[in-house]
Amino acid sequence: MRPVILSFLGILLSIAPAVAQTNEEINAAAEAFESSLGYQAGTITLPDGIATINVPADFRFLGKEGSQRLLTDGWGNPAEMSENVLGMLIPAETSPLAEEGWGIIITFDESGYVNDKDASSIDYEKLLAQMKADTKMSNQEREKLGFEPVTLIGWAEPPLYDASNHKLYWAKELQFGNADVHTLNYCIRVLGRRGVLELNAVAAMDRLATIHDNTDNVLASIEFNQGHRYSDYVHGEDKVSQYGVAALVAGAAAAKMGFFKALLVAILALKKLLVVGVIALIAVARKLFARRGKTPAPARTA
Image 1 (cartoon, helix red, strand yellow):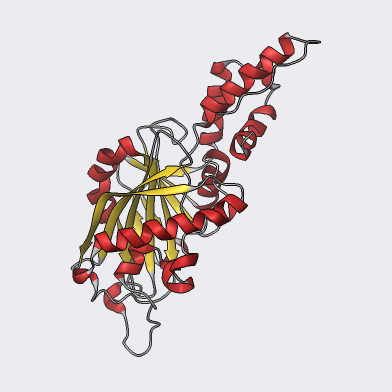
Image 2 (tube, one colour):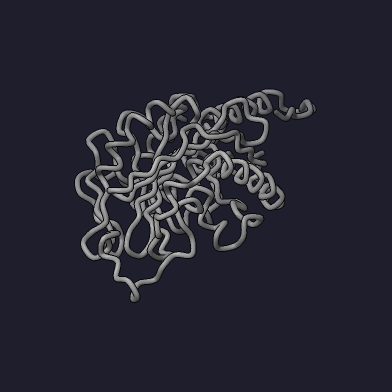
């Protein structure tokens, strides 16, 4: 039984015994979990005043605590992956626990001013080949930690850099394990004086068009505050990053630790359809309780 299913099942079991739950009660429990996350709207200042988000009308904002709970208890990611999360943007139209739900995770990499002079000369197909190799090697560490291997299928949307606003975005298509449904990892980067704001959208591949259509609004909604902007960089005084735009796309860790150690467990896993999974588990539990005294049949694995 996967840890992610156990995690969310534990929340439900704290409300009532699993065998007594109906599908409606399970959905109600999921709604209660979501309502406790603490959605916000309007103008949000990120920690330490580094940037401001004017939350788009069709999004909701989650702060650090709510984001961590959604990422770990809701989507099944390891806790250490959410330690540096500053917040999330969640579409207002749907629940992040629903099959079609998705969200944008916001972090800040305070590694210094990124010189963007290499942006116009990057061979992104060559870079993609290197990223595929890096991802393949990272699976050894993922499997040691009990997580499924991940395959980088290719660009869902090739990188595009806006040199005038110092904003970059691209999208990757990923496969976790042998999953038939592939994962979309849509990446947005905003360059600043002391580092990079990182926005990562995680969803199923069929949400690509939806996320793409929202990219301009999201890019326009977030800006570094005065003193933290790219143009505020002080030559000779401020820290300069060890990597450029190409390494942002490959993963900043690749420049810091070496390509062969990149992406050890840093790719957010495909969010699990927890409500569906819990319903299935409870259905099994009901059958077992109904057959009291009988030897249960061997469990099947997917």
